[in-house]
Length: 441
Image (cartoon, rainbow, N blue to C red; front, side, top):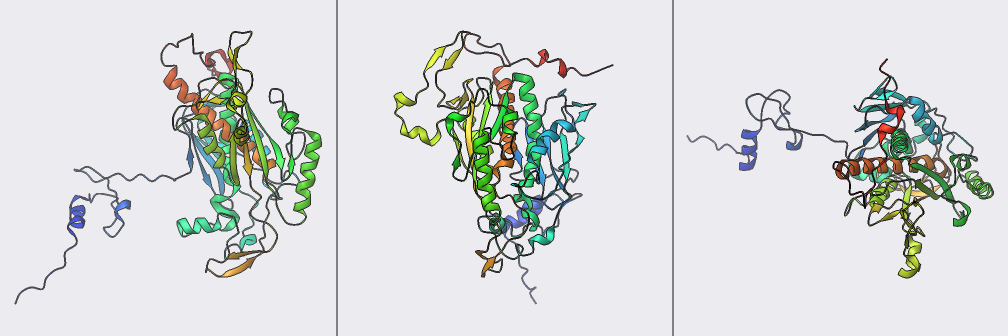
């Protein structure tokens, strides 16, 4: 009697089975092929690389953020930092205090100290050149506030799209989509600001220039002279006291109604060296745009004259060159926003970032449940009636991360060999900064 035929897997599957290594740590054959790996002896092992997609920023100065709103904590790992940079937790805490919740009546009432701890990458107050791990614990979670949002999607929030993409999500506090993720960015940005200042004197400063329909006129703030003290002189972070009061009133008006409004943050960078940015796909303004639009609630970006530049003719819009008293090539106007051809030209870089109204509001809204039923949602929890006052340090930090990354790229490519001093100028020498010398006594 002939034996019953035995079903065979497809040829491709049989070949994969023959080629798949079976050493220590191999996944079972039932596992998806994309997840199998081996460290077996005697044959070439397949490698599995698992990356936290979308959680790392930068190419040379790399920052990976981690953590969720109601998890154990949040933070970042910074890789590529130069050694011998003076760094303490206090350096980062200054910036984190500007970002933290509960700092005024116009921000979320969640009470977090956002106290940071540097767990690696420094020794006796100096960076060592190895990865720097910064951790901030979460201490004021209220998971029960999110029971309704576990069942229904908040309109214009990431709840629905996280489900669409992953099929699962951390409900409490919005999980990874929460603005608490930006703690890691701000901590890393504090270090980036310090490197930029030490190496080339770069100053980065942002402020609120619009809240809802209250718009700070362009000619009120002098980009050459505006100071951090002016920005921090009020709870909305607008450097003009008169317009600051109008903005605060606008936020208070919607706050008591359980609603929210958006606004605009303007950012300037002074003393930026010439030559940062690379054509074609890594233009400086393209890198800045990506950085800013990665921030929670951001919806728009413009640099220099931006969209208003479309109202000019070429002869009106062009920034004419001239030679200043020191023999430097300068521009009489700065409609380019300090960037031409994707490369910094030495003028002040300035840009604006638009933020939408906070999605989570204390008013009933029509939505859909996770079971795909039409429902009404009245969201609870503690949320900013307007995100822009706390977005200011976030914008500064992302600008710093872009500029320090581009600075390192420029030095690596363009200053390896002697410069053409007729056209180029060297970026400030770190050796002229005594603070960079470690104490060896």
